[in-house]
Image 1 (cartoon, one colour):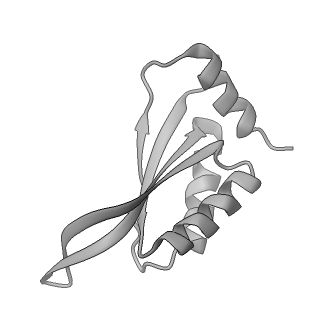
Image 2 (cartoon, rainbow, N blue to C red):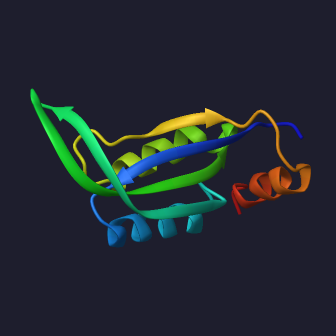
Length: 108
């Protein structure tokens, strides 16, 4: 395996937006998979006010070689002014699954 698998996370204001953007990123081979968690409660500070919101969380699987394009595209599609886009490196996993992620992120 010559590149790392990444787990990228982002929150969305509602499930419809999360589905639409996840579908787009997978269609464009920027992510191999997106897992949508429909209801999370977020408490955060925004513009000096503590906010509380119901959001949808999405876990995306992508690769190091596609991450910059993934991040740029997600940011361009995302409705938030400053979207949560964080990324974690996968230290280990089922080799066949990691190869599947790599294949799913290969430009066609």
